[in-house]
Image 1 (cartoon, rainbow, N blue to C red):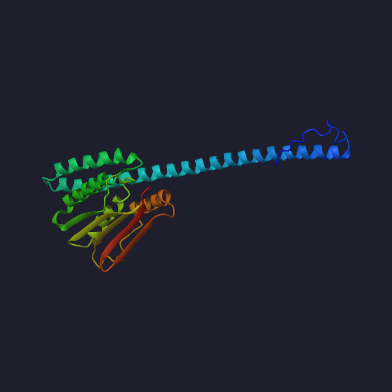
Image 2: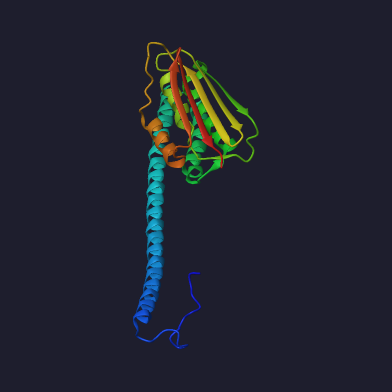
Length: 250
């Protein structure tokens, strides 16, 4: 037992007051009380410091995520506006339609991306919207397909996590190529979401840059959101550029 019922033995005459044994017993009792209270204090202080460090760490990550999100939004706007500018120069009849598409995309970037997560179906709609914007620029030079495998109803994902890879395909896949075929797939497999993007590119453009702001940004976001719990493989082989991303669903 940690607590004795023999609280005051000297009253009952079993221990001489102020004798050696009495002093030892009192000293041990005091040490017990001091040790117990000190242990409690040290434990409380440790938990307070630990919670404070955890809070500061989470605050740092949240601040960095906000910065990364704010960094990538103008990036998409500038690229899309360049496409709109090209259409207006050509006096294309598609320019008004592109303005409408762009306004929908701006609404997504400004409002929807402020949320922690969005339904995957909604995110796929925005990806399709972005592809339609790019097709207005490149016309028949682009063919695309989006496949969905598994039941993704109710699946939610972090906004703008896949778009940088799609943008990268358009940015580099058509650099020296007359045609580009883009295939995108989403698959829910147990508690995991698998995203695959593939596009062809010309052999002359041997190395597609993966160091731009979009790819660097999404890599850092993945490291923060899914530390050591995601898979990202980017490969270039046989004139094909492919991205494989696996993230947990929780």
